[in-house]
Amino acid sequence: MPSNGTRKHTSSSNHHHQPPPHALGSSAPHYYDDDDGDTDRGSPLTSSSTSSRCWFGFLYSICQLLLFGSVILFVYWIIQHEEGFAWTANRGKQFNLHSILMLTGFIFLNGQSMLIYKSFLCCKKIYNKILHCIVFVCSVSAITIGVVSAIQAQHNVPKGAQPSHFYSLHSWIGLAAIGLFALQFVVGFFSFLVLLCCDQATRGFRSRLLPTHVTFGLIIFHLASAACLTGILQTARYRLSGKDGHPAYKDFEEPTIVINAVGACIIALCILIPYIVRNCGQKRKSL
Image (cartoon, rainbow, N blue to C red):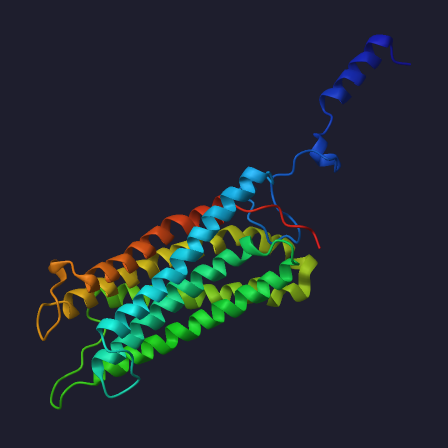
């Protein structure tokens, strides 16, 4: 029979090794959204306080203004100063079509697809996944048509001239972004939608993969932004040359201001979207 001292020691030892409250399923603070295993365990959830919601709403509104503003400004620049779009017959207009499709796919739709998970937290996560996938497919479609338009425009040269493809830094960055974009879509579709048919068996794998998926999404967005910025600069330097009735880029007239504003929107999005994805948003309801 143990002595009193032994009993006290055992009681003290048991107390010392008592598991933390969160291990017992208590109501201790829970810092990560864990509704179905597909969570970003590397990012703390923000508080659900009024000030946090207002801060998130403000940043989200600015992001939407920049996303829509970049597309609207570029469409205005093309229609007002560059005579619009064309699928064939006019090389300049074909490149205009290429430019707006790549901006729409790489920046607008890609940005929206990343913000979806921060926008509809009242919905079941599967609905967000499906919507994210649909917007991503629209983005891939716009990019694919944009690339085809650029190739056709390069072939639209005078007889005897040799078309040139993928010789510029802009095209190299674009190809890298397209390749990673396609890889991200295939891996994400298979891992986070197809594997849901074995939800319990693949929960751990999806949870471990998610931080990498999110990080690569942000890397691709920055790479796509670099492609768009170099393309915009290349277009501006060529079109705003001061020849054939066009103003010079250095004269800082309306075309220059508009095209610079588009570039500024893209740069601002490169700052805001990663901040929102990594730091903002409320805890998702488990539905």
